[in-house]
Length: 375
Image (tube, rainbow, N blue to C red; front, side, top):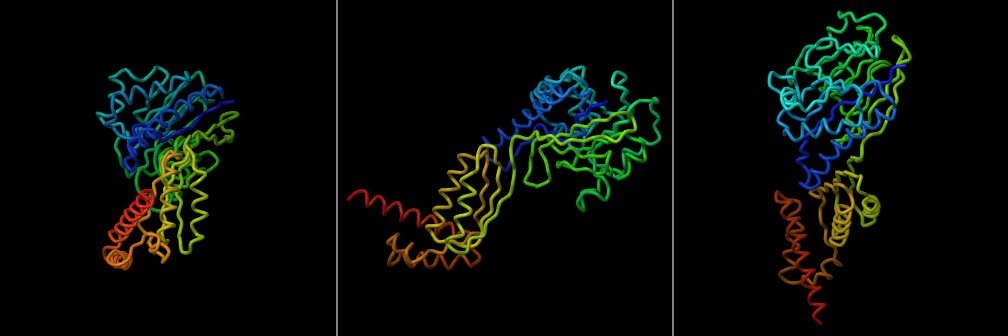
């Protein structure tokens, strides 16, 4: 019985520039923690090796500290780690891999396959056929050589590649770094471990994308997993088990507000967010000033609980009610200004009018509260 742990797309060094700096730092740090969990999983499950199908690093220019920290994160599993470069960390003549070698950062149990040649692991009875990317983009199938390459009789044949399986992924994705959909069968592979697609996905019985072990984008694609692959004997069909490895739950949410009661379900969803949630929220439609204030308060509270909440209210129109205006005591000139700002939300300066209306309402509310407290 051969037991493999298949993972890919670690993207170590990813910056997460769309988030606040403190949130980005925590999301980046979570990627190292995911590698530590993978190492523990491999050790506890008695894996014969870990296959890492490319994009170990997010960029060639990651710091020396990041390189050292990555390999330190892998120390919990002392068996073989088999890695290939992907499109983000391609094996250029001068690359993050050559720098890691100069730094002496890679432990002896890490095999970085930088050339298209078999790696024979006699102790496990495994021949790994790697297809490392030596440039960011290629229009040729780098796995073609698998079929014409003989490996010792009785050894498992394991393919390791990074790219887009033709005709399987969404339109437009498989235009570069192509991989034939029938490569495993055509090359007599027992298993083909793939990277590049960040979600967990089966191509056929012997070919899988593991996805990234820690979700890194707002896309419902079954990310945040690794795969345990078990082979009873060479030629046997693999048994593949998904294992959840991610810490954070990324998701997109949206709401359209039309009547006052529409806000309640949204407030309920915001109230249950916790430290494992990374949420992108878009709200459109219309609400009154009181509803807008409640929504902003709920968002601020949720942002204090969630790991990150990115809220976009740009498409939400503010429609003050008579009660809103009465509460603000905005008569005379101020009332006219509010009317102009309310009407301006339909014009070319809609964003400016909406923001000005909310700001003015906030100032008036503060003045009203201050006046009330002074009595």
